[in-house]
Image 1 (cartoon, rainbow, N blue to C red):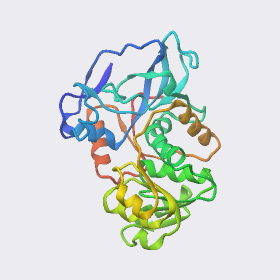
Image 2 (image 1 turned 135 degrees about the horizontal axis):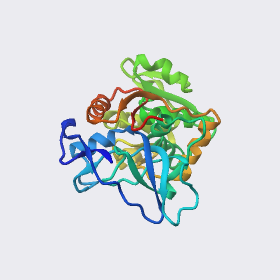
Image 3 (image 1 turned 90 degrees about the horizontal axis):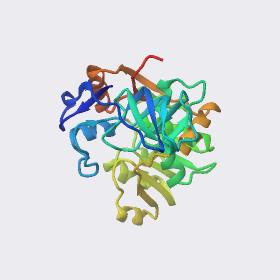
Length: 313
């Protein structure tokens, strides 16, 4: 099968297209005929070697951790899915990722795709959508009426977080650049802060939840907008325990745990019209396509998700 692999850490030039062996499946796994995948910052952070201590993979590494496709074969213990089913998943974090024509996925990480969902839309959801869900629902225990600040609302995690928060009946403020004001409002944001012109920590107060995807100074300032007992959840860097204590808030760092049953909840929101994956740009499944997609992701200015079309539908 065709795959895009890396044999060493480095810049996007280390991405190579070649034929590799089709993987074998275990008794509780399916082989997914992959139709689409998407790009996340973890992809190029692994490629550069930034995460080698946390994820000590052996080379060659196939990057990518979003998949949408069709069940091609299944292990003997798999009961919830049949060959031919359209499914999507955030597979386990291994060195056999989703920049490939076939992907092995554990049954418990799969979710059925709604009939109306395209493979490109499905590929855009898992990693970013699950991250947003776990930040807001699992960690922050979001509820109706909560005031929620979502940093970088036009980004991959941010755009899902706005929509998920609104589905719970929360009031949502978000930061983004001026050119994305209409975009984030179209997702449901109630209050827009142009981070280039305004200091969010001087405009907002008495919030219940902050989702921090920036870290650094943005994270430190975020404590100021929270009420006592509020929650700050970061996907950028572990928050300072001292700062959290000083402001009387609960703060934590979230590292995604793939879960098929939560993907099913995101699929339900999609079917109810409460969640729309935003596919920003689509690239072809070849070496140059992946290099271009990584280059765009590394600018930090991609709108919505960057999707790779592995097969024609």
